[in-house]
Length: 84
Image (tube, rainbow, N blue to C red; front, side, top):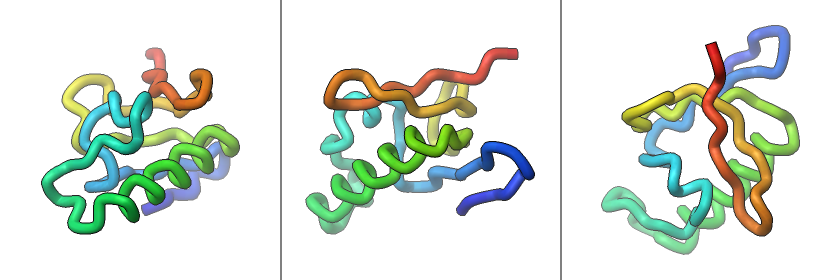
């Protein structure tokens, strides 16, 4: 779900991602990934888009610091929590 905030936007990750470490390795599957290759491609596309647009991500399953932005980290990404 994407929420238009009149600025950078906010996307709620829902069941797409369950932990921030999936930014470092989007191929890490979860039990709910019934089509693992498709789920990995979807996460890759999601991370690329969020990174390119600077969208704020609300990681609904992230236990700590669920609001942040996705940044490039070499050939992968990293999740940088929002400060303040």
